[in-house]
Image 1: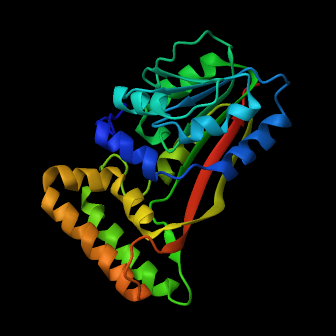
Image 2: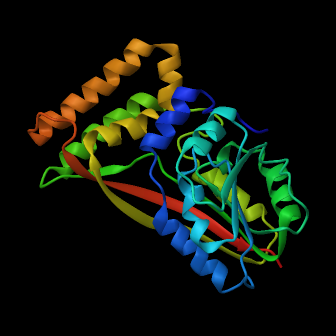
Length: 270
């Protein structure tokens, strides 16, 4: 069963503003693909594209890149962004892609595939991929860490408090981690040439406010916000103030280093 979330305009705008674009992962995907898929690379699909941060990263490698999402608000936000000329967007479910069989060189899903109907999606991915085409499913764990001077451990204890407060609001479909969902999808993929990896870390220097904003885009925070907006705001303010106090700073625009832990799998259609 597919799960539909992230469909409000405000949430889509927050996605665009705060979600991190996985440049390092795109480089990894292309390195995998260039060893297996014959050029030229004509068409990439980024399924569950959200507001398009990952979609645009594919533009230098393909003649055409299409981002798809089931949410009209996400597609509208992506289209309003500054996009390369070879990038476009279409609204559709991940399990019903409006493309011909054997047309696609790369099908990616960045932090989205856990919401799909997994078996229907994998069957549809197999249909649209050309022989030698690649499938790339990427995501990250919801336990980003912060580095700041010699107090990183203190900051991360506060971050764990933030995540712990949101845990009761995580979708039971996801559980404590979506990693098992991705591993199950990997194991059910019949392609013999496939790779699983859960060891990639990326670092971003960004304002503390952006870290808070990113956590606020999580489905668990949005569920809390819908249930009790005042409590959601109180939690964000409490964590922000606690982090700033530990850092001994007065501005939430003070920069920190955020570490994101990615896991992903790649496969090549025979």
